[in-house]
Image (cartoon, rainbow, N blue to C red; front, side, top):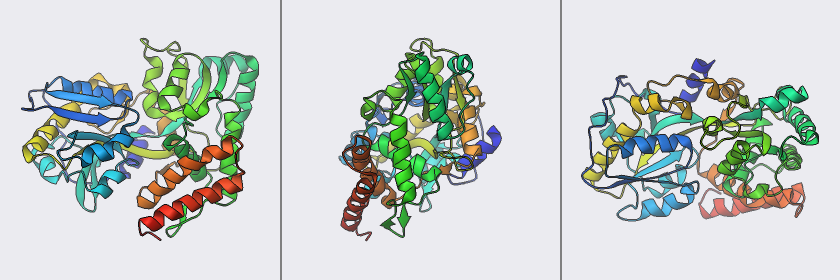
Length: 405
């Protein structure tokens, strides 16, 4: 199953012939400070720690990285030499032209990269992928066993399970969800809507004001009834900590958060949280999840020497040794990775047909419009129909400003 999952993940990237050899220990030190701005989950800490061993390196790991990167990379010189991105966050940097092609650096130093790590945009290598990611179901096995619950495969089954967990009083809230207003909330809509088979566009025109859009909003609101009432501030770290502190029994959360459940330094539920495929909205539908990659880009606004050294340092941070020491921190694309039980939910989600997140300028505008408006329905401020009309109106205005309509 895992082999097929990694094969599916390859479809998110592009191919180029490259040998697969091992890395030596870190023996390179940049002549000047190299800095990285990336997200703040365990995989990025593993990579940045490995780069720190080389010296002259500084990492800023921040869940709000996507808001900081466009301005930081537009500065001249750039405020960071390296940036952590995903297939959903690279677009603003590409549109602004603030990251550099990596073909020459891959040719000089990338002999150990695997083909599916090379992200090509319009024929040029613009990013180095290090891992794949999706959202899967995480659940408290001990609570499920005590209540005789089966693992939910649809969201209707999940709601039934949540009702029984809530009635048992074993946790503060039956369910967690990354419903923070903005990017996270939009991603939850995207997952559910795509699971229902919805299309976002007709050409470049918006197409979410329909029956599937309404059902998506209604399902999202039903789920919030079992969450912390402050769900509109709940990002991935918030939900991860709810799990670790024993406050919730279920969440459809990023696979990159799985390893943290068994971190004895911060988790009270070591060995109790299991992983399964992301549920489908209804039986026979696609999983309500999308496939992603995470990787690294280099800023355009720095000298060629700085770029050369930053890339060499990156190669030290994503080598076999790092993977060996942090195998379960992610579903790595790097040579040397051995899939473990914490990756099985992500694998099953992909096996069940989860689709890649739909990239592009139009989708970036749609994602922003969703993030700005979905909360109005969840809080009862607007009807589902009005919310969807607002989403389409905001997207249309932005698309006209970009010359897309």
